Image (tube, rainbow, N blue to C red; front, side):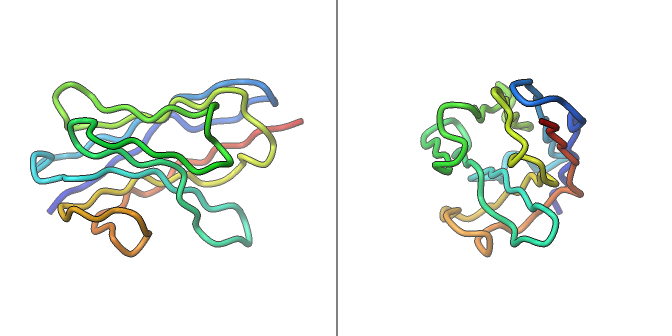
Length: 123
């Protein structure tokens, strides 16, 4: 069983930056793809970014492209989300997710989820 623990959320003003971290407790070597999702109050969970383990594929939602960067620790047991030029509309609970399967395009593809970390961006 893979357990994911996120950290790094907080409150910033618009234009600021935050770096989220997600660490897999064990069995990280089984993870084929990592993703970041977010869910704003009253809205559905939306995909933000994904990375295949080893960095083979990196992909972003249009809403964050050019501002957010997903990366993986060299040991492959953690991923990060560097968020720059934050906007109030980025306010949400951010979730790390992982899957041992090859497909990770949709929320239903992910097997493991973290507990979420809150990001609040004020104008």
